[in-house]
Image (cartoon, rainbow, N blue to C red; front, side, top):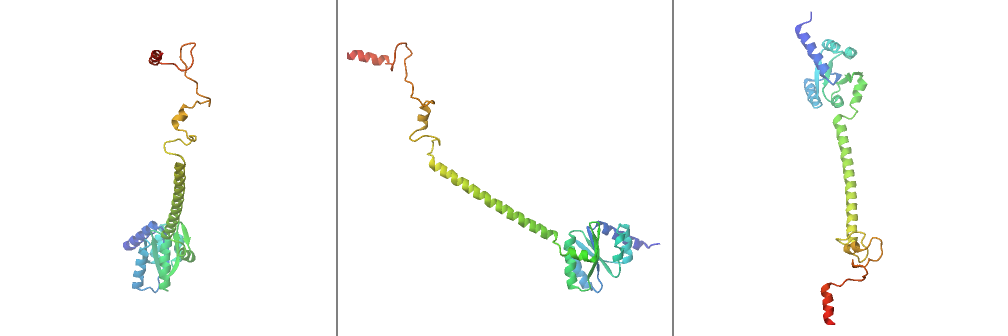
Length: 224
């Protein structure tokens, strides 16, 4: 019968495996306590945790979590990296540590439902991390926005220039189609058919020409 403390450790490892977005396994043989501490601190920046595990317990926990295929990697001293964030960034941290600590070597891993070989796990470190891709995307968007703003300003300036030129050609208060020397009032009085204005006539039959007001007629009689 399994000891209660081992059962608890297996349950804890199983939970950590299931909660991780990715899992990386490494051989830590030869790492000192100080080296391990430095590696843990570097991985914490990548939302990953480093833990030295016993193969027997980890094998049982992985089997209960549905990762029995990871069993061939559990040979020799094993350290597990539980990734809660960007697996690429965590792999980069491990690759950087491996250059500094020769004893550290990747065994493989598991990500997105796929088992990773040692070569595939190491290849993750050569990819662009999520922060790097977001930074590049932000730079591209910023460049596009700046280019669009410049084009808009150029079009706006061109439109305002055309508007000023139009205002200089057309006197203030006059429509654009007014003829030379004509005011809007003169245009309103002009007949629509282009002919001469009809003379004003009296309503009385048999008379023509302009009418004479009564006061003007009496003055004319007095002069005679």
